[in-house]
Image 1 (cartoon, rainbow, N blue to C red):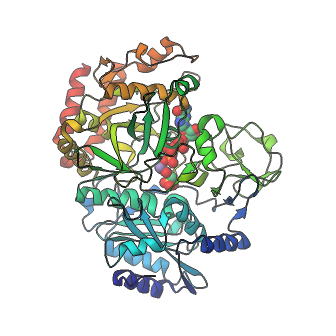
Image 2: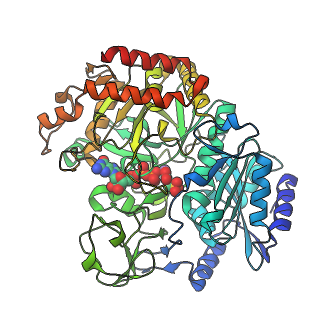
Image 3: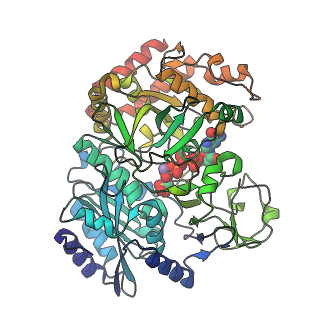
Amino acid sequence: MTNNKTVLNWIKEMTDLLNPDRVVWIDGSEKQLEALRFEAVSTGEMEKLNEEKLPGCYLHRTKPNDVARVEDRTFICTKDEDTAGPTNNWMAPEKAYDMLYNIARGTYSGRTMYIIPFSMGPIGSPLAKIGIEITDSIYVVLNMAIMTRIGKEVMEVLGDSNDWVRGLHCKCDVDPEKRYICHFPEDNAIISVNSAYGGNVLLGKKCFALRIASYQGWKEGWMAEHMLILGLENPKGEVKYIAAAFPSACGKTNLAMLIPPEYLKKKGYKIWTVGDDIAWMRIGKDGRLYAINPENGFFGVAPGTNEKSNYNALQSATRNTIFTNVAHNLEDNTVWWEGLNKDLPQNAIDWTGKPWDASKFDKSDKSTCAAHPNSRFTAPAKNCPCISPEFENVEGVPISAIVFGGRRAKLAPLVYQSKDWNNGVFVGSSMASETTAAAAGAVGVVRRDPMAMLPFCGYHMGDYFKHWIEIGQKLGDKAPKIFNVNWFRLDDEGNFIWPGFGDNMRVLNWIIDRCEGKVEAKETAIGYVPHAKDIDLSNLDFDINTLETILDVDKQAWIKEAEEITEHYKKFGDRLPAELKKQLETLKSKLV
Ligand code: GTP
Ligand code: SPV
Ligand code: MN
């Protein structure tokens, strides 16, 4: 498929190492993909679902020990340990290559090696980047075919260039003890062994588009961020774009595909989805910040997705979709998950492959769930009813607002605006969130997750903050405004106070109004907080006094928070930008 020497040499080296029985180049043709689907079904790797209800859809189960990203086994392998920084696991490159090649050696024997050329971003776009993933998993090939642009054309665009990312994936024995997800930003290389779960093995996604790309962006003057991108259309037909960073399983897909409340919809408000997980952003010719979504599909959380919470995601997953670790409803050969609807399937197989007993289901006990809490759908972006007309725009869309957010049962107000760019960088750098099922480990623990990039930043986070500050300096007065949101405040009984989902539109409208200078706000120690009357609560059964409680800035609680941020900042030592130190001091002085 190519004469590119750098590619052919690498393939030769990998073939010698892995010893496959067969080598297959993925050309991107529907014929080849269909043959692979057929093969995966015949070996039991995937199950074909009801062709009438879910055309072109398949179900896959991973091993129970392999259901989420493994952050403690994820490494940044730079020559200097300091380049990886205090928030990443580090391994010396020679040691890592040695160990990984020993694990991978000969593991493709009796198997087929698939070579997937893929483009992150529209093929040929000046903002796009190319990768090649080698894998022994058909599941990976078929997911990559949805999540990225793949095939022959990618190799044509690459030509003789050496500017591409080498991705090696080996399923091996899916042994958690030998599972490693390693990144070599200085070599443009990724090696992932002993896993078959999405975030660990779809190497275009977190591994390339965030960990490697964040490093590239640092070197080349752009940004790779864990952000959704949406367009908000007002009744005049004007569209403003917002990029938002929330940690894993904290609502990016939901916000990106939001349907406004009925009365706002009638007025003419509409949301367009550009991306739901990753944004690559750079300064455009006019000096504004432009973003593209490097992906071509959605790898979305299934549980909780339903007609009401996220109609557009559900629609996206009605055809040509791969479901992973959801329940198999044998009644009609479809899928089910907690929160899809109230009809608990009476004849179903749970995500571990065992018959599911609906009578024992207890929402609060995860072990009784039919679908894994991190079960996912892989759906083509073009299926999404609200996909933005700008989705394929090679220049990207201009960003008016950047929004940070996380899960905070207490403290963080529903929404506030930072005072300026550097203050916004401070807000992002100090954000915290309760952990979710998207990564292996404890769930519900508050941790600092700067810019929602803690598990995804491919270099020293102090340098990453500095990079943000420098981008802001270049943008000057054309910089997007920076906000923080929290949909997840809980009452004393543990219920979410804010209705969330579609009603988040009310908050987005305030954000855009602030960007356009159309609405006043209350200045507080942490930033500009809305006057409760300015959040439109029309046609909503939600009391303005309750809204006041979630807009409140509790000084005592923030004093404690500032102390925790001080601790958090200590990790970065002298790589913490002076601008951020100053921001923290200013906050403290305003809280006394
Ligand atoms: P990743 O794909 O892991 O990066 O996750 P994500 O950030 O795209 O999260 P997603 O939109 O899939 O939402 C994850 C969970 O948060 C789901 O269970 C949603 O139901 C829930 N969620 C999303 N938005 C809201 C909201 O506004 N309020 C509440 N209470 N829950 C929400
Ligand atoms: C996340 O965890 O942020 C995801 C899913 O988007 S994964 O691809 O597994 O990283
Ligand atoms: Mn994500």
